[in-house]
Length: 299
Length: 325
Image (cartoon, rainbow over all chains, first blue to last red; front, side):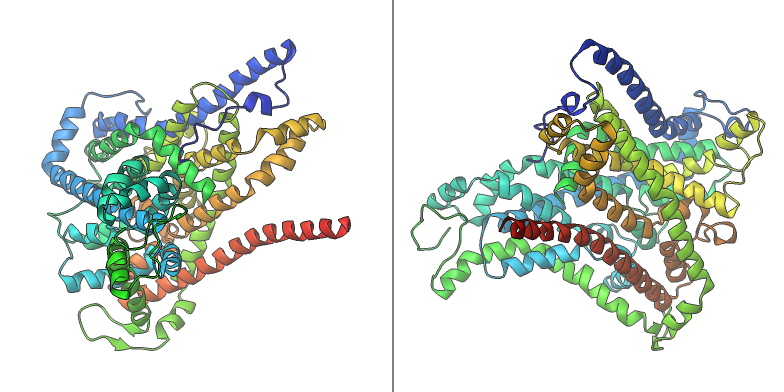
C-alpha cells in the first residue's frame, strides 16, 4: 500500500492522441523525443548547482573569480580539502552531525513504531482523543517556540550540547501517523490473535510481529528523519553556542561568513556536507520517493 | 493479550472488555507506556514552550536580568514597527515569486513524466535530489552563481552584451535570487507529488472521455484538474507553510541583517534577529505569535477553499435525489 508500483502504467491508453494506428505511432515517437528533451533540460537545471559545486571545489579562488568563468573541473581539489580541514574542525562537525542524525533516526523509528503499533492494533480508553491530540500537534509551527525552547534548554543546562538536538525530536507525530496508517493495513489481526493465544505480551507482539511487518515504513521513516536532522539549521544555529561543538550546517555557515575570500575552500566544505547525504538518499531513493508521493496522495 | 476473556473469533482489535479494574489496568498499561514517549516529549518540549512564549510576549526580557511585564506593549510596538512589516511584505513577495512558477513547472514536469517514457526512475531521482540536499551548502553555491561581480549569471549576461543585474544588492534582485532557490529546491518535490496524483486517476475516466469524443484540452480541464484538486491544494498548503517559515536561504545568502535595505529580511529571520542577536526575547515571542496568526489566517483561507469544493458535491447529490423523486 505504501508504494506506487502497483499502479499500472496506462498512459498510452490514457492519452487520446496516442492511438493505435501507424500515423499516431510516428507522431508519438516525435512527441516522445520532445518530451525527453524537455525533461532533460529540467534535469540539467536540477543537477547543475551540484556540478557547479564540484567545479568550484576543485578550482582556486582566482579561477572562480576569473572572467570568462571556467566551466570545467580544476586541479585544486586536494588543496581546498586540506585548507578546509585545517581552518575549521570540519571532521568533528561531520562526526557530530552523524551522531545527531543517527540518534534521531533510531529513536524516532523505535518510539514512533511502538506508538503506531498501539494505535493501529489495540483498543484502549482515550484512544480517539489521544490520537486527535497527536494530529493537532502537527499543526503547531516550530518557529513559534524557538525562544522559549532556548530558555528551557538553558534551564536544563543543555545549551551547546548535542542532546538538545536529539531529545526533543526523539518521537514525532508525523512518524506515528504515517506508521499507524501502514500498520493498520499491513498487520493482519489473525497474527495478533495467534500471538495472544501463545501468551505473548504487548512488547513481545510488537517486536515479533509489528516490527518485521513494518520494515518498509520504518526504513522510509529512518531515512527521512536522518535527512531532516542532517539538514536542520535554525535550531542548531541557536543552540550550539560553542564554536568547538558544531554541526556541519552551522560550521559551514561559520566558514562561509569568516573565510569569504577563499571560495574554493568554502566550496570544498560545502561538498563535504552534501556528499554523504546524497549517498544516503541514492541508496533508498526509489522507495523514498514513492513514500513521499504516497503520503501526499493519502494526506 | 493477558485478559481472562476468551478470544472471540470476530475480534478486530485486541480490546480489553469488562475485566476487573486492576486487570484491565495491567492489560492496558503496556499500551499507554508505548504511546507515552511522544506525549511526554510534547508536553516538555512542545506544549510548555508554547505556553511560555505567550507569557514571554507580554514581557520585556533579555534572558539575563529582571523580567518585567509590559502588557501589550510588544504587540503595540509590532504594529508600528516598519522593519517587521517590511519583513512581512518580503515574505509574501518571495512566496508569490516562488510558489506560482514552482507549482506550474512541477505540473509540467509531472505531465511530461506521465507520458510513459523511459528512464522515469532516473528522472524522478534527479528531480528530487535538490529537495534532500543541505540548503546551507546550496545557498552558498547560489550566492556565487548570482554574485554581482563574478557570478555565472552576470558573466553570461556580459557575454551576451547585456547589462549585469545587481542580484545580491538590489531589492528585487535579492527577492528573485531567494525565490529561484526555493523554486530549485521544491519543484521536483511537487512534481513527484503531482505525478503520483496523475497516476492515481482511474484510466476508465479517460476511456469514457475518449468514447465521448473529448479533446486533449477538455480532458485536461474536465478530468485531470478536478481529480488533482485535493493534491494541488495539498501542495499549495505545504508551499504556504514553507514560504512563511523561510529562513535558511536569506540567512546564509545575506547574513542576519537580510541584505541591502533588509530586502531579504523574512519574518522568521527577523524573529531570529530580534531574539538571538538583539536578545529581545519578549519581542521575539511577539513576532512568533504574529507569524502564527498570519499562518492561521492563511490556513483558514485554504481550509475554506477545500470545504467550499467538497460542500458542493453533496448538495448536488441531494438535488439529484430530489429530482429522481
